[in-house]
Image 1 (spheres, rainbow, N blue to C red):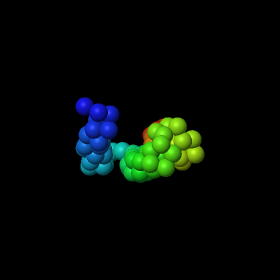
Image 2 (image 1 turned 180 degrees about the vertical axis):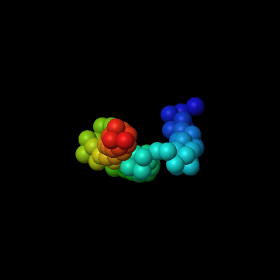
Image 3 (image 1 turned 45 degrees about the vertical axis):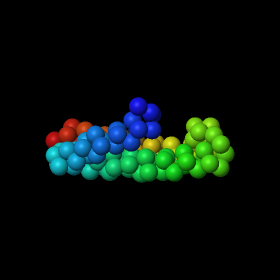
Image 4 (image 1 turned 90 degrees about the vertical axis):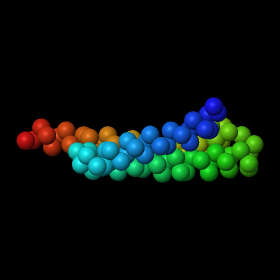
Length: 95
């Protein structure tokens, strides 16, 4: 199995994770948004990788400006998840 196939197949468990997380109603809203923003990272990374390969003949990891731009969405996703859970923890401490 290639890494590309594994990457594509990993999307299904993640979508299931999002479905359960959303359905539970227990996840802080901001954190849930962060988990969904991770899908934007995936959606941006795939075409960026193809562009890097076609235009530069390199993998995405070797084209710094393109790689950094794609990773921005991952960082944004992580920040939202952390802030969402932080907000929930602080809200619990006040009660």
